[in-house]
Image (cartoon, rainbow, N blue to C red; front, top):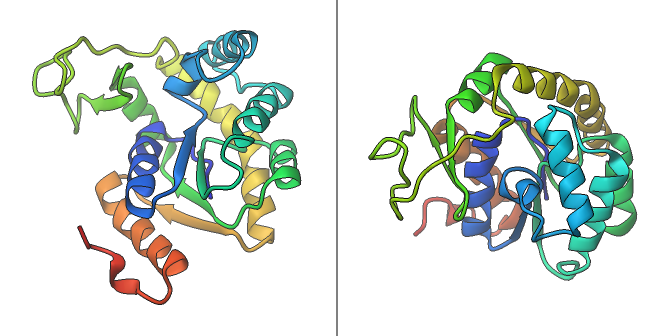
Length: 219
């Protein structure tokens, strides 16, 4: 299952909700996993961080090397890739080693994404994400659970975000067409995560548990 979306706030929420509801392994290629070198060789981690900080997409060969390394450890499991693939070359590489059955595209307006990212604060150790406009921490600047300081990513500036989203649109639209032509793509549009998620949940419940659609809403 793939979640190649440009809005990290929506995918942070949905890539957390999907594994919790549907018992799949989640791998994120953004946020903490990009910033940390603990999940990939040091040289790959540093190169990825340099690209992200400059508002550029990570080169195909680098990100594909990382994916292939990580996929070997979960190849016998059901999984969700968040933020990959972003180019047709990456999609073809993934298809050569894995079986993809579902691609979820979350369509959020450009200005909404830009506003969210510039208002985003992170708790790096846990990956918790806050937004000062609609999901603020209980105490300004501090994580709700640990009380530790929150940070903003270096690349969450208006200029860098604009460059990043333009790069995303140019490179990723062909990927969506690639999977649409295979009948795998399902698009969900909106601006509020709590309104989009129930539709994603219902779609996946019907797809994964066609014999028991009432799974949606169960504790």
